[in-house]
Image (cartoon, rainbow, N blue to C red; front, side, top):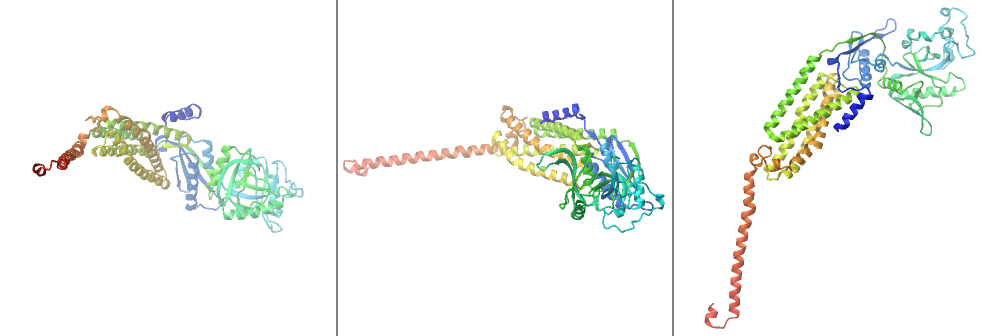
Length: 551
């Protein structure tokens, strides 16, 4: 196991950007601070409930990216995100994107330099757009109705420049009004109808390859969406209408709009009633997973803009880390002293087990730090320190069971096996409670407490593995050596010192004296029976004389 973990870590260092040391959390290393400011319509305000919901969603996004020990809270009307270490582009995108997803029907579509593809639409406004009516002359009957395309909307569409998409605040457009925007690549311009399905109706989203009817893959990445009951109902109604418009493109298209930009506007190729549509487009594996995570964890109640991005220093620093490591070293030394005093040479098994457990734990934490973004905070280091005592406890339970068997008169080899059967059940029960406590704490806690719970859970599992695969087999081997099997006083398994010798003498007397007495008694009885038999034979074969009869 150590060789395998070492090889994995070495491969990460050589080819995967890994390291031989675990990453540290915000309190020990510092990191990046991002302040998000709400982006609101004029006169609108943000509520504390909206901010709290935004914090919860952003925290889920950050956790999904593999970044541990992040701090996310509110300061006034802003959301402050503190990430340990250097912030990569994907994590930055997860934080900064509001993921305000809207599903709107397409009314007009064309290249950024062209006007509407609708031949009946005017390419140039006949008068100043400000003087044109922005209200439909005929009330639209649905989201795809061209009555939404008023002269004002047509003029806006014709004059819209895709390069200015980031400046027009399309992400705060009213949901019940049309929207002029472009796709994320700025290569297609759209006029869209009002929102007909909200991103809040999404219950799950995942990234995957597009599959063919035969089960093969096309090599194209997509985002698979699952709607809730309301979303399924709304999307089924929309897909029915758009599929009927398949002869009137682009009105048969449905745009997935994220933060005001069109991710994809696929044609409706059928009626989707199961609430499981698929977004396709210019996705890579990374971008599809990032979008799926954003949508899976819900759309933010409001949009945000980045107010500032700063580098922050560690809140605790190297001094506290050094103090924590010294505390762990002191605890380890005390455990070693106790086991040597209590178990003498048998303590070598405890020390070796602790060393192996420490090596495996370090390699596992380092690999998780490389692959999953795990970062060690001071609380996480405390979990590792506490694990020293928990690990030693398993060995003590095992050793004491073996000693109990020696007190009962068993030989050392038999005592090791019998003691293991009894100790293993106790160890599993104890570690099961520890693991359950760690899981509950990890699920319910936030921040650095999660780090403590995680390291505690990892070391608990490693402890059980060490006891099974090293401690017990090592004791089996030592039991066959002369030093331990002879009950040397320095072995820690001396029957005389454990009080088993006196019971052993009683057992000897019980097993040897009683059978001897029974044997002697049986011999005397046999001699008496033989004498009686000889006398009877003499009487039967006698001369009939009085002397013979009297005999």
